Every structure is written in C-alpha cells, then in structure tokens.
Amino acid sequence: MTAILEIKCLKAEVMSDRGRITLIDDINLNLAAGEVMGLVGESGSGKSVTGLSIMGLIEKPVQVTGGQILFKGQDLRTLPQKEMRSIRGNRIAMIFQDPMSTLNPVLRIDTQMMEVVHTHEAVSKQTARERARDALGMVGIPSPEERLSAYPHQFSGGMRQRVAIAIALMMSPDLIIADEPTTALDVTIQAQILSIVQKLAREKGTALIWVTHDLSVVAGLSEKLSVMYAGRIVEQGSTAALLRRPLHPYTNGLIASLPAHNRRGSRLKQITGTTPSFANMPKGCAFHSRCSFATDICLSSPSLELMEGRLLRCFHPVIEGASS
Ligand SMILES: Nc1ncnc2c1ncn2[C@@H]1O[C@H](COP(=O)(O)OP(=O)(O)OP(=O)(O)O)[C@@H](O)[C@H]1O
Ligand code: SF4
Ligand SMILES: [Mg+2]
Image 1: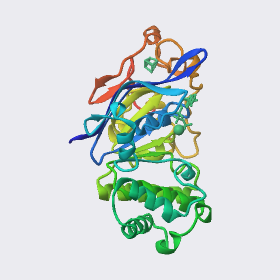
Image 2 (image 1 turned 120 degrees about the vertical axis):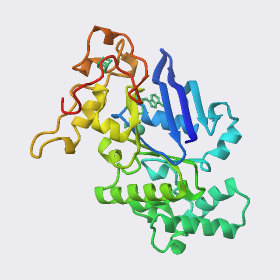
Image 3 (image 1 turned 90 degrees about the vertical axis):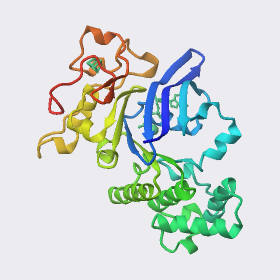
C-alpha cells in the first residue's frame, strides 16, 4: 500500500525564558491511503501537538524543531506557507473537539462553506453552494438547503460538530485528523458522529487519524493504533495485535483498564501514578516510575524498535498479556 503520511523523528519544543522544553520527540508514524489509525494517550501526552504539527498549525511559543512530515512523499515542513494553505482544508483536514475552532460565529454557514470551496477551487457561486448543501446532507443535517442560511449559534452542539465535519469532508481530503471530536458531546450523539465520519471516510477512501485519550472509543474503529506516552510513541501496530497481546507495559495497562477486560462488578484496573511533567522529565524511560517491569536499565532511554511486526519502545516487553 502507498503511504499517504509518513512521519519521521518529529520533534516539537516550547521555547521559554528558561530554555527549551521538549513536548514531542521521535514521533514516527506511517499511514496508508484510506487507513484508519487511533492515536491514543492520556491527557498531555502530546497528541494534539502532533496533530497540529501535521496541519502546520503549531504556534509560538511551540515550534516544530526536527523531523519530517511526508505527505504523499512531500515534506510539509519544507513547503512555503502558501502551498501549505492550499493543502490544509483541501487535501488534509482537521476536526477539533470544539467545532467553533472551525466555525466563525458571525458568518452564515453558507458563506463559510462556500469560502472553503472558493479557496481551493475556481467554481461558480452556485456550484459552491450546491457542494455546501450536499455536504450538510451527507453528515445528516435535516433540511440542508434551509440550514445553509443559519448562523452557528442556531445549531445544537452535536449539529454544530456535524457542520464542522461537513466542512472537513467537503473537499474530499486524503487525510482527516479528528482530535477528540466527540468528547464534549453526550454518548448517543458521540456514537452517531463517530459512525458518520467513519462511514464517509471509508466511502471516499480518506485516511483517518482518530485522536483520543479513550482507547475504548477507537478500539473498534481503527485498523492501527499508535500509543503515546509523555510525548513519545511507545507502541504502534495493528489494533487487533495490540489488543490481543500488548507488548508495552503502558499499552498493557490501558487495555487492562478497558471495561471489556474486567469481570462485571469488579473495579476497573487503573494505571497508578501520574504522567511526569515535561519540565521535569525523569532520566531514561518516562514510564519507569509507574512501571512494574522497570529495572536499572530503564534509567537509560529505550529507542523505538521493530518487534513482532510493530514498533515498540521498551526494554522489557510484557510477556503475559493484558491481565497481568
Ligand atoms: N502553547 C503551548 N505552550 C506551552 N505548552 C504547551 C503548549 N501547547 C501544548 N503544550 C504542552 O504540551 C503537552 C502536550 O499537549 P497536548 O495538547 O498535545 O496533549 P494532548 O495529548 O492533546 O492532551 P489532551 O488529551 O488533554 O488533549 C502538554 O504538557 C501541554 O501543556
Ligand atoms: S523501558 Fe522499562 S520502565 Fe519503560 S516501560 Fe519498558 S520496562 Fe517499563
Ligand atoms: Mg489534545
């Protein structure tokens, strides 16, 4: 399969008076055309910084300071702003947790959607409006023709997120990065929105990166999983293989805390401890203070290596599986 996205050794740092602090480092990802990947890790692990880096939307004081982001073989980091703007929203789109990150509160939906079309294609107003209407219909917004002339505040939270999704899908991008798009919504609407994005992406052959802190959200949606911890990928491989036999102690802990892995009535197993702060990263493996497999060698940094057909960053892979 052709790689649509290949990220090599990506690094981003925040610059402050006291120097630089690394937020993400040695991020390596591979995504084939039409493939669906879950990017999972607890809050603050660097998922959004990774997504925004791909989009070229990182802002000061954060800076991408190393690595390559190859999109169809072309390094996005070396592209002039103008070319990056023509890719963003057109070939690569992002859906954010808050749809108002995409929507302008003072403009009608048709104005906003038609502007997206006109930024990327020289078509008539009528064609752009028809595209916008069809996109609203596609994401299940009732009476799309009428809703085109509404303002964002006239939609419910779930419907507003559907509009943002319609905008992301409108140009049939090759890649969509969905950064916790359903976290703020109630459970029923969450499920509807996940299945709409998944279905439309499949129909159009769009590759998807689902960013979430909740493994149970993406376990059933993605073919591939990348697990992040403290700004680094710690394990990456096929979802089925990782769920069946996680090799990294952190992935193992995440899976053991999934409801399906716990007997009914028993308490969910949680990973004890908290993520270390970026300003005070411990020496060696960032997970060692929470890891029951840690030994002295873990005070040096494990590198990301190929093992059993997946990428793994750990000196002592788990042998027993998720119930340990
Ligand atoms: N502009 C910024 N300035 C300073 N630190 C930042 C900035 N943006 C992000 N960070 C830090 O980078 C780290 C990673 O943040 P990021 O938002 O990528 O985490 P995340 O995995 O998306 O978390 P969440 O699940 O809460 O969304 C965090 O420690 C965060 O505080
Ligand atoms: S490298 Fe060591 S501390 Fe880190 S996850 Fe593996 S066993 Fe645990
Ligand atoms: Mg985030």
